[in-house]
Image 1 (spheres, rainbow, N blue to C red):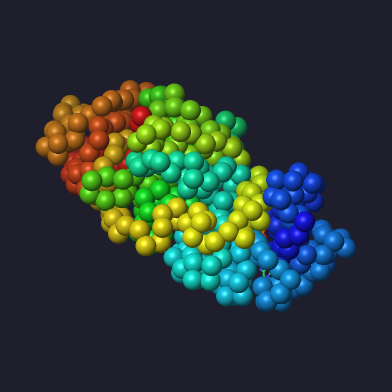
Image 2 (image 1 turned 180 degrees about the vertical axis):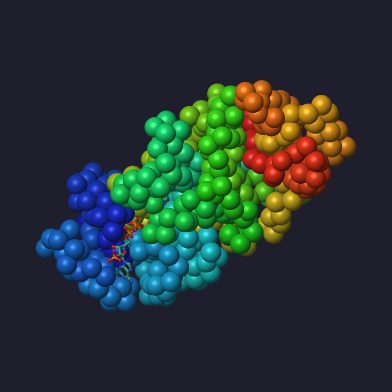
Length: 436
Ligand code: NDP
Ligand code: HSE
């Protein structure tokens, strides 16, 4: 049985996890793959640390170029991250006729079309299960398991770091910076954690899912991206009182006008399973026209959960390496000549429900003024919470949940509400999804 030779670019958190799981489970894995899968070369900047991790099992170099041009290597696994050297090495590996496995969602969400085209032209595979939702086989589910369906929408908790931060802050009352440091220590966070907390990482993943769900090009630049840094504890508390949890959701939704592609903090009814996904766990809810809703749950980050997805890709490639390229699963689920050019909608055209919090003077008529602005903008109120002013206070909070409306309507109404003399400061707006 010919063994498949693998080169590993980067042996950090995920690289080390991949090396260890492959070594530990090699017998089971080769029984499944029909081939042995062997890491024969590792490239990492820190050669001494890499040698310590791999022992005498394989050659260690500090220049990835040596690895991608090594004629003995069949599959290059890119676990460096980013879109600088990683892009260069992936394209060189493809040009040298090697299959590629990567966990690098930043690279694929920004340069995916170019990379997949290069792979297509060369007849090699680029596999990226680990790039979305860590250990959850969501790419497999979307590209293969749900292939009979017209996907209507996807909504996911797809960033472990931010979900961990929101959960720990709520349950343990810890502050943001303390929890972020812990997420970094546990290996969940990106090299630049602003990618996590500002929603960029989740948007990379949502972009990839939108491409394979709807058969459109990879268009990260069109995604609407908001993170959790502006979220206030008071809104998490009010949301709970109204029966909701706030989660950072990545949403890709088909509408008659185009595709919504957005990442932002979102109120979700607390009774939904996905609202109860805590810590670094991820969950992706997919609505297909035939199957209905399906939910995928598991560890979205960390060394071995991510290694699980990387190795699943290695096994897939080992099984399919000898197949005709036309008989393999297309990179973006749809045949390259059957991609659609459905537009991605600007956020102003998105339709959803809203949580609005305003701080007001506790005066006669304030509520009537606000509700009349909303009514004039054809925004219907679904629920409302008005706090009694604290003793001696003359100001209070009003919280309103709206029915579905277009974002531009809400923005126009908010401008008018903020201009009222009885409304103090800015109105806080958080989108709300029922996911039903
Ligand atoms: P790490 O930073 O832990 O590992 C990256 C490794 O690559 C480090 O060992 C680094 O060395 C090495 N490296 C950097 N530059 C080069 C270079 N030019 N040549 C060779 N090696 C280099 O990152 P992770 O393992 O966390 O992430 C890897 C990828 O996996 C990223 O794309 C990330 O987004 C993705 N991912 C990560 C997950 C996680 O839970 N951590 C989950 C899913 C995906 P040095 O440390 O010396 O700089
Ligand atoms: N930083 C990412 C997260 C790693 O926290 O989800 C997994 O992609």
